Length: 451
Image (spheres, one colour):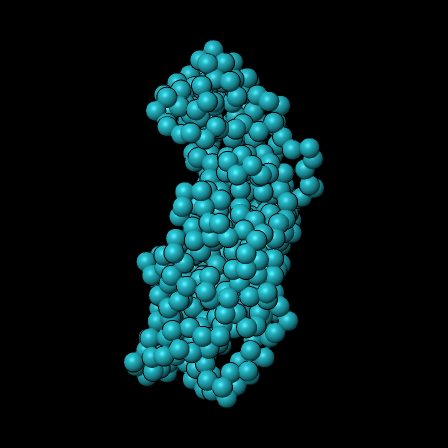
């Protein structure tokens, strides 16, 4: 296999012969290791390497795509031919852009060399420790049905014929533990996860304690009467909703009339307690990078400023259409993908209230700790949702019992306008391209369907 620099030169030369003007090669590679243990032994051990090279070129004001995993002479011809065929069938009035580069780029290092030196044996030991701790904590733990430790490393390089040449390497690790507990005929399952760029920050004992405490705390859960309740969305549930509706802030969706935030710039879409940030330079953000998928310099931006919508998220195409600058939110799922708009590390800025303070303020309300069915029970265009939930019933400021078999319903934007308190417990969900996070939120009222 030839060197990337030689391959790039051959592709660009062949592309010019075929009539392409601007051209780009997007290189991505990743290495992922995951270890699963079951009852003290390694159940699964997966080591996966993947990567490839995406070619993007402009032909007569249209863009064509193609990709390969192999750097050789046959791939040069294949990339140019397939991209040319692709460009000739794509119909779009938007002019494609291959970016020449930002004036400057922020310094950001998302790679921890110490994490790269952690051995598979150390990861296996962490998983075994986590599982053993869970069993030792409570006799009601029937089985640890999932115990996973994983790490990954990603490399991205963007080169084009306009002189752009950028690269970034990042790595991170995460662990997940799920336990099944039983008391009499009642069975409950709950899982906890943690992410880190420093392996020492993965606390196996703490994760086990949290998972077991939550699972056992939910034993004996029952439904409640239907009605409107003040609801505390604990950070996990609040994060699920922000992730589900993060597409509302995409300029691409706004321009395609599939976002209810169209025409809302500068308007109050949430209570002043809500500030939403998208920060691609978050130090511990596993989606952090000094540039986006088009080579635009990354910058932190306030999307919702004390309740007012201050910007949409843009890539170069949507920014040109709106006559603004890109916010650096171009994204590619992989080297095979087209460029889209996506958040990086998006989160609701934490407030000052503790979860206990919020609960203490409720005469009668519900703490929701998890939401289910977001893929089917939420409309990402209208903002409406109706989702299965479980958590705890609060009366006179105290948790009195666990709750399940309920559904909460509302509208995401209307809910943001009903936020009364914002918690100080900001946390993030598992990274799935983007990292989304939120603190706990006290909502004035939501419709709860129970019995």
